[in-house]
Image 1 (spheres, rainbow, N blue to C red):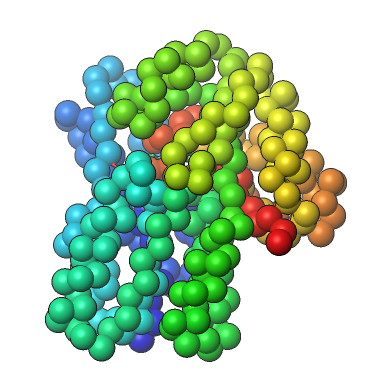
Image 2: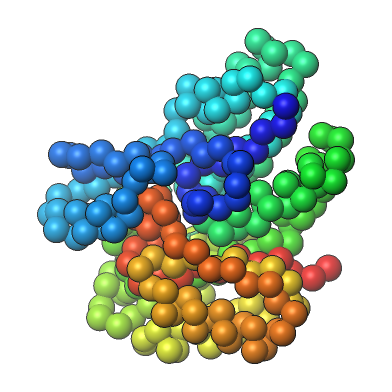
Length: 275
Ligand code: X90
């Protein structure tokens, strides 16, 4: 049996039939499991009113192991290993599972990214497995595909990223000011790279468009997610469709983990470059 798995940094409901392994978001008084029962609005409202620190935890080796249970061909996609232990946990679970099930096959993909870029990778895996390709070829082609997937985003706050040591305090302070957003990308190493600072939503969209052009987007899939900002996501999608009429654009809401780190107002866009 073939199984597709991703950690919950991939936004859901994404692709039908994918199994998600949750990360956990918590404060000193409450924990939120990032699964299908999580109400993202409730999480964000609670965090906005909570004065103390908040944290996240990646899935345990055990939770990856139970996600593998019963499957023979497994494709698992994780959030960037540069910012989370999810990939290492998935790889440790892989070793344990293969000891018990020597004939099983498991490919773990480090997305070096998150959110909508994981969705693109899952869609690719699904396309190739649906076409009936053997495991080794699926793995090889997905790794090749991942060399051309990119993630860009615009964030209104870096508070939670800096509170948890995922970006520097200096970078975060500059964005804390009212109306200042950053435009950034997932670097080749899988970290957050800041590209520009923009005053206001309207300035961020042309900057994102320029970045997409510069990265070599020529039309094709674009997967957009947003945190409580459907208007900005729609405006961005319209711009993309006007500039590249062949683009295949889909919008969805960020779920728990990405909503927590990207924070209210954010949009993220993943796409595939030509060549
Ligand atoms: O293991 C854990 O506790 C999870 C830590 C995740 C930290 C980073 C999450 C980033 C979420 C923010 C914008 C996109 C940044 C992409 C950088 C590769 C989304």
